[in-house]
Image (cartoon, rainbow over all chains, first blue to last red; front, side, top):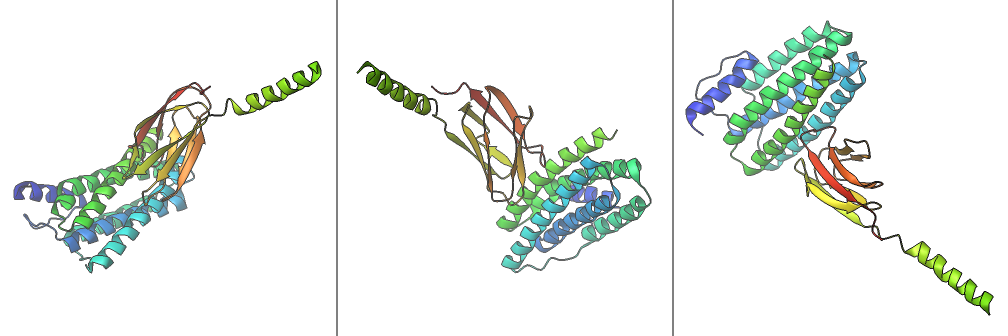
Length: 174
Length: 109
C-alpha cells in the first residue's frame, strides 16, 4: 500500500475521532495492538451503558453480544501480545478514540427510552463502520507480525457482522 | 402350523418395520473464521446437521424459516434434526454476514 493511501486512511480514522495525527505516520505493531484493544474496550463500555439504560429487547441482546464478542477478541489480543512480548503503546489515535467515546457516553447518559436506543444503535453502526474501515485500510496492512495480522483479520470479520447486526437493530427502531 | 407361520411372518414384519425407515445420517458443518463450511449441504429428512464451532466467539445457526435455531458456544458444537423437505437458508444471529444453506430431500427408504 502506498504511503499516500495509508496516510489518507489514517487521517480518515483520526478525523472521525476528531484529532489530527502526523501525516504519513504508520502505526507499529505495539500501537496497532493498543488501538485495537482500545476500540474494543470502547464498544464494551458503550454496551454496558446500553444494558443499564435500555429496556428494548433487541437493543439489550445486541449489547450483550457486543460485550461477549469484544471481551473474547480482547482476551485473544492480550494473550497474543503477552506471547509476542509486545507492550501495547498508547498513541494519538487511541487517545482520540477514547476522548470521542467518553464524550459520547456523557451525551447518551442524558438520554433515555427510545431516544437512547436509537442513538446507541445508530452510533454502533457508525462506530463499527469507522473501525472496520481503519482495520481494512490501515491497521491490517500495517501489521508486521503474521499472528497479529491474522487476529485483526478475524476481528474484522466479527466486526463486519456486528455492523450488519447494528444496521438491522437501528432500522427496526426507525 | 398356519398360525405359527402367521406369527413368524408377523414378527419378521415387525422387525422390518422397526428397522427399515431409520437410515439417518449426520452431516457435519465446520464453523471457522466466521464462515459455514461447506456453505451448502444436501441432507434428508431425519438426518442431523451438526455444526462444529472452531471460532473463539459464539455463533448461532438460525434458519430463516424458523425450522431450527441452534446455539454454538465458542469451541462447541450443536445439532438439529431435519423434519421436512425443502431449501433452508440459515445465518448467524450474532454475525448476519455468516450464511449457509441446506437442501433437505425426502427421507431415505
